[in-house]
Image 1 (cartoon, rainbow, N blue to C red):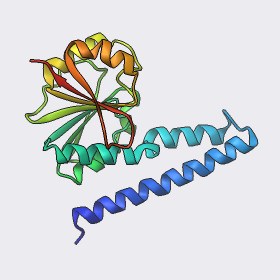
Image 2: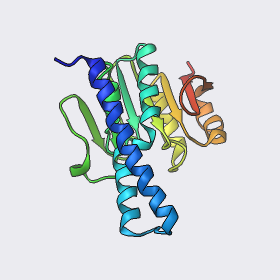
Image 3: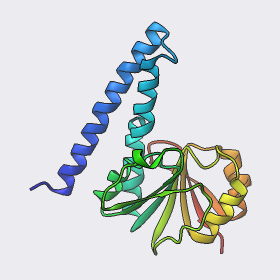
Image 4: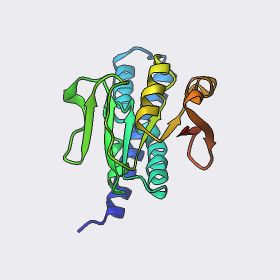
Length: 194
């Protein structure tokens, strides 16, 4: 019988292998100027659908959430939600939020939820939860409304790869904003002001 640690190692290995294939395909594209060719389109689709290029980022986020005692995460801009596996193996409920893909491409299983909707909307998070977002909040507009909604529903938000100036100027109205050290990439921890 597999342990959660075995499952986690297996997930990481699959992500590494897929990322290696994506890198090899990208090298071919670069060397032969094949941009916008079928190979380029296939590479882009695999990379976008699986988010393999950021498996280590989500693994770090999941470990951070576990170490800080969160029971649930709400991933705003989750693509297809494959990265939910990293939270699942740590016993953390994962809810993905996106509307970029049609529902048949969404990663579905019994433990995660996928909200096919454009944020902001009422999430009604479970107690002891955190909102997370990697490379979404701060890039797709309507951030004043997103900041207000996040402050209404979450005490804590973890945001990565974003527009730093906008995080401080817009989200800083509702949250104390602090850079997070020790994660794979640049993240900001937002704590709601009382």
